[in-house]
Length: 98
Image (cartoon, rainbow, N blue to C red):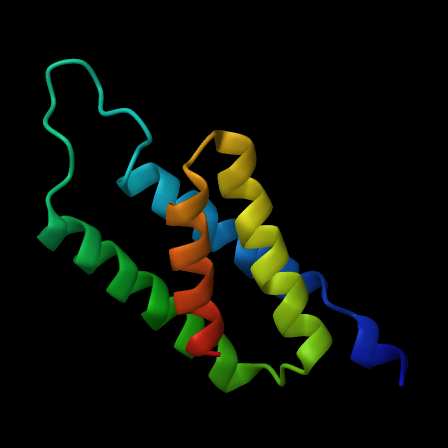
């Protein structure tokens, strides 16, 4: 029963996925660089989904762990200043694929 509430690995994955996204799709592109293309954004999201699928195959996720994953993902992006609609879309995409 206690393991049902142990969501540390889920939270860590949520944080890791958010950082992965932030490193590859920065909020403001570096000076002299163009913003990431739609193809680049799609590639990054596909890699995130691949990481999620790998995690899901080796970890049993209950509703609490799924919620903790999504929540940690959201908060890291929110604290970094990403727009709310981007955060909502990305989080929804992750949750649907859980």
